[in-house]
Length: 125
Image 1 (cartoon, one colour):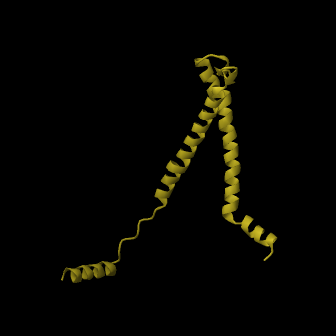
Image 2: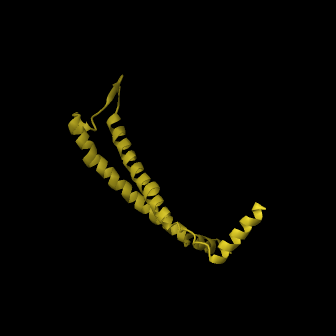
Image 3: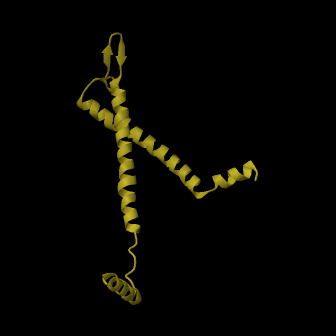
C-alpha cells in the first residue's frame, strides 16, 4: 500500500475529521474568551482598581526592571474561563448525556426467572 493511500485512509477516518473540527471550534472559542477578558472583564476590573492604563499599567518595579503582572492576571482570568467552560461541557454536560444514554437491561423473561430460581434452590442444598 502506498504512503499516499495510507495517509488518505487515515485522514478520512471519522475521528480525525471530528478532531479537526474540534480544534477549529476550540481556537475560535479561545479567541472569543480572549476578547471577553481583554475588552470587557479586565477593563471593568481596571475601573475598580484604577491605574494609568487600567490593568495593563499594573507593574511591579524591581530595580530598573518592571514586571507587568496586570498582563499575567489577564491571561490567568482567560485560562480560568476556558477551563471552567471545558469542565462544564466535558464533565457536566457530557456526563449527563452519557448517563441518559445508559440503557437498563430488560427484565428477565419468565423462563429466565424460573431458571434463576432453580439455580438458587440447587445452591441452597
